[in-house]
Length: 186
Ligand code: HEM
Ligand code: HEM
Image (cartoon, rainbow, N blue to C red):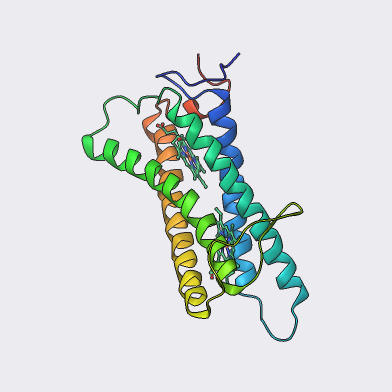
């Protein structure tokens, strides 16, 4: 039975659940974000507005999850990377992990600020969230660009990270992926 907390050898159940739950949620938010922003604005596009509503709600959920996840990571052992990696790979792996945390905060926060700048409130399952900035058309346009490029950066890092994980598993045949899966080690 796998432990809830991390050890220096592997991730525990809480970190594993948060990792895969967030991976699915973030990939779904990216796909939805790309799809909905490509829909035409003409007239009153009810479908687009509904999709944006869901994207915002689940984007705020991701902000809640990453807050828990960061707290858990800070309070837990950090499993070691695979043995024998060259220094540049160790640095690259940790850099990508830290960049993920930065992006997992920056994306929802920029989305939230973007909505406030557009003068459109953000709801979280029935609760209206506060606006931290006032309506401002220029800022709104700028934040759309910021949010978009943060999203593209996240896509690039996911591709690098997932490729590296699969490479470790199938080519190097080490424990990297098993550490992040329940019941495949110990
Ligand atoms: C981790 C969470 C999030 C991810 C990964 C994400 C990702 C994306 C992506 C990839 C796009 C498409 C960008 C484009 O091609 O133009 C997008 C659009 C958008 N996102 Fe997010 N987003 C997140 C959270 C949020 C939140 C919390 C809000 C608001 C509260 C939000 C509001 C929007 C809006 C309004 C658009 C459409 C912008 C436009 O009009 O083009 N997003 N998002
Ligand atoms: C949105 C997608 C993803 C994000 C944001 C993400 C983020 C992270 C982060 C931040 C870590 C460091 C541990 C932690 O703090 O939780 C990690 C570890 C890991 N991830 Fe992901 N991940 C994603 C998708 C994937 C996918 C698709 C795979 C596999 C194909 C994968 C495989 C792994 C593995 C094997 C580790 C452990 C690496 C090690 O410690 O040596 N991840 N991930």
